Image (cartoon, rainbow, N blue to C red):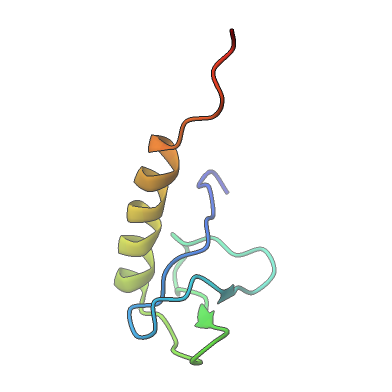
Length: 68
């Protein structure tokens, strides 16, 4: 598995609390079930990958404290 896995926001409730099966790979076929822990929504592969891409962009933009 090469992809970074981040908690993805649920398109229904907005929470980022995902239940993933062991050994989860978001690019595998068939797509493994990903479920929201809050509202129990089951993500489609397209929903999950879109959320994963958005979260990766948000995390890449974060900056830590600068060295002085």
